[in-house]
Length: 410
Image 1 (tube, rainbow, N blue to C red):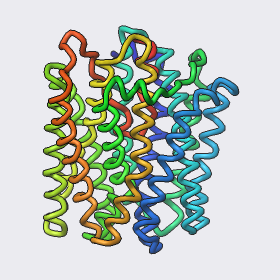
Image 2 (image 1 turned 120 degrees about the vertical axis):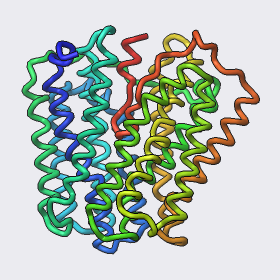
Image 3 (image 1 turned 90 degrees about the vertical axis):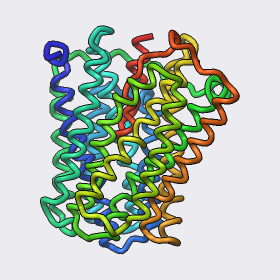
């Protein structure tokens, strides 16, 4: 494994630093927005703006790289992404923050496109799974570290915004100075909605629904915890628990789904995630910090792997040459859901209180469970020998996708 990772060590170091800054921003911005009396709807729209920019970056990133090259694009996107945290601190305006989050989402998506295509170019069919597993592990770990860094300084001051800016800036150094050859240019993915629907209704609906739920989590979980305590450490700990839970739940869910009808796994995960969501809603303000973090971790372990299993289920029915289109299309469905989800959840929280965030996710997950069970009655599962190998979907940590891995392996 060490020998496999050696050629991409500089890139992985850049990922680690970049996502530490990303993790810091993901908790800091909602907390500071709440301190500045931004409305819950405004904070939700801000979360949706990030995913709007992110989705655009995923769709346009490859074409941008084709024109300018990997190194130039990475340096340019890192420069802009480094500036946005500082502008957040200097420009305390709702509309400005929406625009800045949209810009940040676009920049980070393109940065991930560069990194993931570069990682894939430096990998072989024999070690690619190990390299990308290390990538996922590093991504989730450092995001948790970044979230915990919000407790270092007062979110009302400039220091945390400056720290986020510094981390994103430094992340460019290992990539720009790497001696590894830049990857070949990839072809842009063309999304065929009708064909994707023919391949799997379940995959499309589940990816869209997980975007609705997970997008709301990323945007509004700090607002949810602020109703319990204004301590930044609670928001950081709760989000960290969910991310770690999501990481821990990926492989067991994938291992199980490789051996049964994947829709069974999705329906069970959705039902349990709905139950945990109801539990978080009903016990709001009653749990200790440790209990709240553990319950948040359980939610992450159930909610985040659903998208990964849905991607694998859809690929089971895809034909040779369609895997890249499937991955890009499902990423788009997730992104659309993540754009809409924060606004829907924020509206519900404005009317019914902050605790309703997890009632919202519970309803989404329950609907997923019912839909998948109905689809099981209408279509047989893919034969076991037709199952593609399960891989962790990087949407759990808000990176681009595994399009590059699938493109090379098939």
